Amino acid sequence: HPMTRILILSVGGTIGMVASARGYVPAPGLGERLRHALRGAGAAADALPAFDVLEQPPIDSADLRPTHWRAWAQALQAAWDDYDGFVLLHGTDTMAWSAAALAFMLRGQDKPVILTGAQVPLGVARSDALANVCAALTLAACADVREVAVCFGRHLWRGCRVRKVSAQRFDAFAAPNDEPLAELGIAVALHRQRLWRWSHGRRFAAPPFDDRAVAALALHPGLGAVAVRALTADARVRALLLHSYGAGNVPAQDRAFLDALADASARGVVVANVTQCWHGAVDPGAYATGSVLADAGVVPLADMTPEAAWAKLHVLLAGGADAATV
Image (cartoon, rainbow, N blue to C red; front, side, top):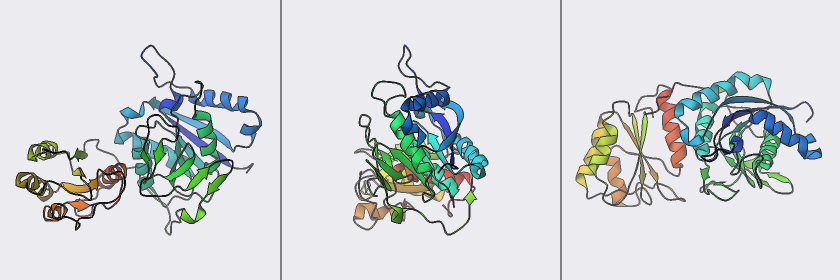
């Protein structure tokens, strides 16, 4: 629509990197480089909505910390009434964490927030950057999309359901327990029946995060109580996210391990459980090895992704929720 205007918030990642003697590094000035590339695209760029670019200090997304989320949420919320939609240019490595966190901070949103990036930097041969940005701008102008989503390659995914699945393919993201919100082919096939429709007004938040508030522990054979106690000894750790086996299983014969979980829970540490499996869910009653966790006060998180679970714990705790509320 000729009156539609989009804000592009650029925060870093491969899409804006430039070559150096030590490999690709973050660099400022992506907005101007992007406009230059679009001018070269000719008529294709003319079909895109108008946009402004707001650049944050660029980072490699491997350097992401929860404190970055607050700055980005504040920037989006400050500009919310001035734009019809938003695009966040972000690195791929931690995009799923940021998409989930923003989804939990922008509850009740009435406009699109589309995250995208690239596997190959803008301006480099065979880069996917321009195609991803053009698709994200198109979807950010769609008033039916009222949620945080990731647009990458050939799909649009719900932000709190997506995971990075490939370091090599241009289709770098998927949602193992969900369906795409759109397929991007010759036409954009948007599945409107799957889109969120919020029943309440905006309940935006941008709480102050403590980077150490949530710890994660991936189970492996031989893991014992020492690891649990080491992670939860820090008084700033208020939640422990277990990445368990299968349907949520842990070594049930290791009494010391279970006691360490129970002790942490009794001290007010939220202990939650997601599966390591790519597809499926935590089913606490499926096996005896999973049901013992209930006695230790561990919260099963069904089919939440590890990224969404970790981000949601951070958002809840930063927002002031106590352990029982979480």
